[in-house]
Length: 293
Image (tube, rainbow, N blue to C red; front, side, top):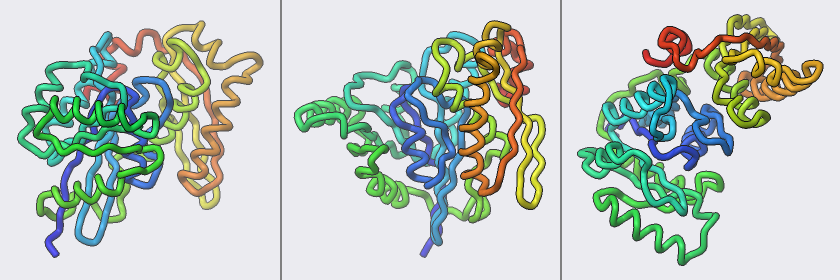
C-alpha cells in the first residue's frame, strides 16, 4: 500500500465546532472548547497516524473582522491555513448563512484543492431545516463535497475521516508516528488554564487574558508547574483572584484535574496573576506569547 500524508486545515466562523471536530478526529483534547466565541487563538496541529497514512489536522481561530492587534494575528493563522493545505475543511453550522469575511469565502469557493463542506450541529435541527440548509450551502460552494455532521455526537465524523484519507496525496510521514501534536507541553498547560477562565469569567475578562507557564519540572511521580495569568488592568486582576482568592483557586483546581488526565501524572500547579498593560495591542508582547511569528 502506498503511504498517504497531508495537511487538512479546518476553517469557519467562530463557535461552529472546529475544535470539537479536531478533538474527535485526534481522540485527544488538544483544542479548548467553550460556548464563547474566539476560544481558539492559535493554529493547533493534531496528528492522526495509521500504518499507511498520516493526517495533519489544523484547528484555526474563527474568522472575524479584526478589532485589535491580537485578532489581526489570529487571522494571520487562518490565512496561513490556505497556503499549506492539501485539503480544506470548511465548517458551518445549522442556521448560518454566510462567512463573516467575503475575501476568505471567495478563496474557499475558488480553491484549487479539495474542499469538504461540513454542516455541523444537525442534532439541533429538523429534517426540513436540514434540507433547506444543505441546498443553501451546496449552491454557495458548488465545488465542495458536502457532509451533514454532528461533531459532538460523532454523526458522520468517520465518513468524513475516511473521505479525507482517500483524498490525501501519496507522501511519506511528516512527523514521527508516535507524535500527537507540534505544540510543547507548556502550550497545553496555558490553554487548560485559559479554558477555565473562559468558562468562569464574563464580559471582557477572558479576552484580556493570556497565560504563560514559567516553570515546568517533571519528576518520576509528579510534575511541578508555575504559571502566570496576564491581564491588562488592575481591576481585572482583582476579578480573576476573587474574594480571598476563591475564583483563582477554582481555576487552579479544575486545570490541575485536566492536566493530570492529559499527562497521566500527579500535578502540583501554582498560578499567579500579573498586570501586563495593553498586551493585546503590543507587537513585542504578542511575539512573546507566540503570535505574529
